[in-house]
Image (cartoon, rainbow, N blue to C red):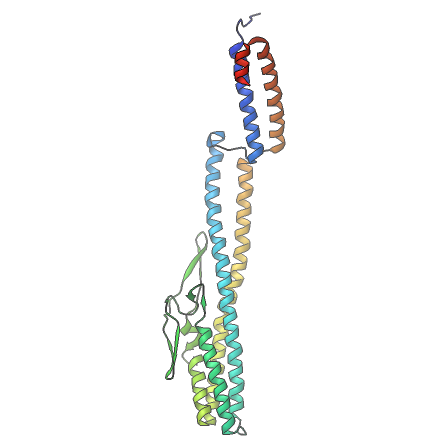
Length: 293
């Protein structure tokens, strides 16, 4: 049998090894990760970096979806208020066109319709976080109201926002498409109704009320865009959350620590380290042992 005349080097190596094993197990328990530096598992570390990049993109998409959802809800609520106001104006127009309505009452109704027109213009100029909802891609206030009529200052451009890898969503419909379509001009029909009521022109009142009905149909049609977009965003939110959950599951598989195994490894390393230190106490000089402690 060959006996090592100087086991000091082996004992020291055992002490360093068991201490390193302790540190590894402690780190895994504290971080919950098996791979804490690339050298622990280069392939898993590289895959985790890719996953983290994907998670970062998803977080940005989730933020965009949340912001768009709030914006679309604001736009839809605004158009709902427009629809309510237009229904009120149609009811007033029908009342004003009645042959039994006096000229004085028609003047009062004209003031009410003018109030509806003012309200609709204000609603059409609604902004969300500093940007107008119905100005296309323009930063200008969409509509300007003067005694001569209502002018659209925006454009017909549309914005698109990325909501997932390779997917974008249109985020707006121009104000002219919603409020001033040929044959369905909300502002023009309301102004014509005011003018007809002021002049007591029953035929004009009836015609303007009919035109306003066409404009209401168009607004309701355009409003569908926002309802569909909200439904799409709800589905996208669900999909993005699932993608993120899948990535986190992959992360756990790639680099997650088995806490039970790490705890067992820690106990084994501590036991082995104590044994090595005990052996060293019998062989190595006291000053060296003090250094190790």
